[in-house]
Length: 522
Image (tube, rainbow, N blue to C red):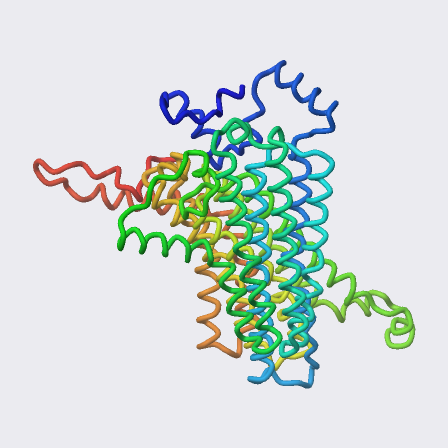
């Protein structure tokens, strides 16, 4: 089994290349690539268990769940921004919310950078023992402290302590991940077999440590700047998010100026920040599902916390009638069901999208992260729409904020699909490619929410008096459109084919009945 993953620089057979390609593809993680071999694999697992070694699947599931929760609850300080009903939605309030949303997006993306680093790290570390499990728990414990530091940042934006503590947490996370690398390379049997039997293991370790410590190094500089010039700290933390792309651009410029660099050792190519490097599709899906699930849960938590009437008020104001007391919260329940339907349908579109994706490139991962960041903002949209009854004069602004959040959450999903189409042979299943059976249907499904939210936003510019009705109409119409979407797409394609059939083909011309946007009948 070990020989399957051994890198041989002198001779590379096609079979060996194919096996290496399978091990590196996003549709199959290194861990799953090891799950072959029948009885021999079962006996090796029993031997590992006897030595206190286990595979990392369950620990990775726990880590993905925890990271998705931490990334999502970052929105809570924004949704709990206290705005009294008497306070107008003026430029001061807009600036406050915009600042908090911007800081939320930045910290959400930094958490997802930590998640991506964790994903890459455990593509290298295939097995864990008790020490590695405890080190991972220390990393997760530090990550769980990030929402507190974020709350300090948004509550006291001009006080450096919140920024300083946030940077210290990121530095600690990087340091623990570096310890995991050092420990795993000290005991090579914990590594992926491809690396365990590689002759360039020391070079590999140096390369991985350099990548892991880039972000913490920037945060160390940001922590220093926070003590005397905090705006520079935000700039440096933003650089952590886009560092892989800066690195890629710098490499491209260097190649143009001084020529292509020497080819790295084959063992180093697996762990890199190349824009086209496949991510683990399974972990992308697990992290995304966690974000959607937590967002849906946060909506009902707000219902349970804010919309249960006080027993004394029920007796004194509503003569003991609980039904009358609950009727006051009718708009809140309407906003909850509409918001939950939005979260659920966005998850459904995401699920359908990744059903047709074979592997996710890093650019697709970035777009997915941006989409999830705005999905995490949907509790803020719920807060805005549930306040229609208390703040009717601010309905227009609330509707526009909600439409903008839904638009960006969905348009980045559409961008994922568009990016996948650029490399469709590598990233998409045949049925979703140009001319495929599901191509037109996926186009319609992913374009539905961006078009509906953009139309609702534009309608409020001309019919501002009916902004609330327009928004609720969108929330009601989109689920029904999803139910009828396949039928509508089939009808539209049938009409287009009929119209094309009316055109007589030119003599000697090619039959274009199988144009890319007109696939065969479903």
